[in-house]
Image (cartoon, rainbow, N blue to C red; front, side, top):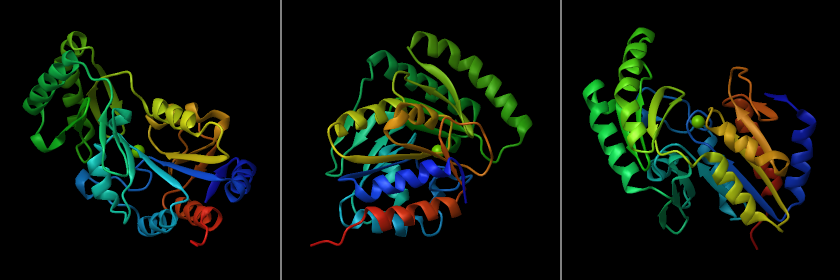
Length: 265
Ligand SMILES: [Mg+2]
């Protein structure tokens, strides 16, 4: 099911069919994979992995995952046949298809603040609720009651605020938790960088996301590509097209495969 600007989507399909370089930018959690209480069980919706493998099979489409997770987790959970390019930790970490990992702009002050924040978080919630990533400590409360979440969030904010202040860090909410993070990198920065790399190329680029952190990416894309929100509610978004998970998403990806793929010589 598609809603939002259907004409814009048709225009995009036309461009995708004729361009030299199709570029598919994908958030992972919530967009391709439904949320699960155990975040290591979040696998793509049925059919998604298969169609992405088909899209990737002829090497024409550049597929880039842009996630809040560590890049290595996305690789593992997505389970695609070919090596994938991943911007992990909201653009703090880049994994190329040949396996090179690059970390972008983390100071020693930030690193020691994050370590402190991680230790304190483990005092407040069970350890399996604390996720440490490059440039970020995330506490997950999916599956907890609203009242418990409120209490924990209040405690964590009080403990983290002085650490954030002295460690050049920021506290941010995300869908299902709270994180202490090194600010200054967003999914928008990643999208901007990819657009710069594409300058001069005849490209068609789409970014699919669901979370508030994806909105930076949608805005950065502007008129240079198609921003698509994959959500089953009607939360306001800077994206111009809305797809339902999984049926709208699958329809879009199959259409991509049909239009962007070419027979290998
Ligand atoms: Mg997401």
